Figure 1 (cartoon, helix red, strand yellow):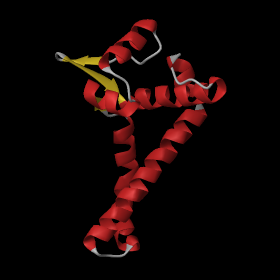
Figure 2 (cartoon, helix red, strand yellow):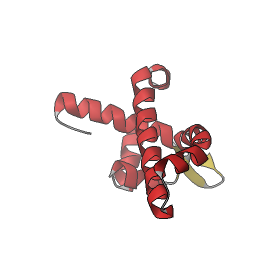
Figure 3 (cartoon, helix red, strand yellow):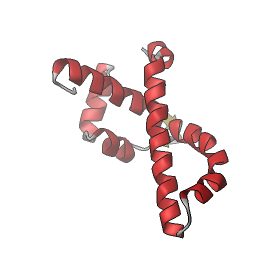
Amino acid sequence: MDRARRSDPTASSTRSSRLEDLLALAVALLAEERGVSLDDVRQELWPALPAAADEMATALLPIRAVKARVGLSTATVYRLMQRGTFPRPRKVGQKSLWRSDEVEAWILSRERRGADTGRLL
C-alpha cells in the first residue's frame, strides 16, 4: 500500500495543488493585512514558498490535529488503524505523531472511494 501511495502521481499532484492554493491564499491575506500590493508580497515570499510546501507535506501531527483534519474520533482513528486502513503513527518519545502527507493521502483515497461507493469509510 505504501509503495502504491508513493508512486501515485495524481495523489502527489493533488496534494501539491492544495498546498499551492493554501500558500496563494496566505500571500493574499498577508498583502491585505500589510496594505501592500499582492505583487510586492509575492516577490518577497515566493522564493521561500516551495520549501514551506515541502515542510508542510511532511509535518508530524498529534492525534488532535489528525482528528480535526479527518473529522473522526480518536476511537475511530485507532479502530481504522487496527483494520489496517489508516496510516500508523510514528513514536517520538511517548507521543504518537502522524505524517501529514500520509493523512492527506488517506483522505484523498477515501474521497475517491466515496465517489465510487457513496461512503467515506
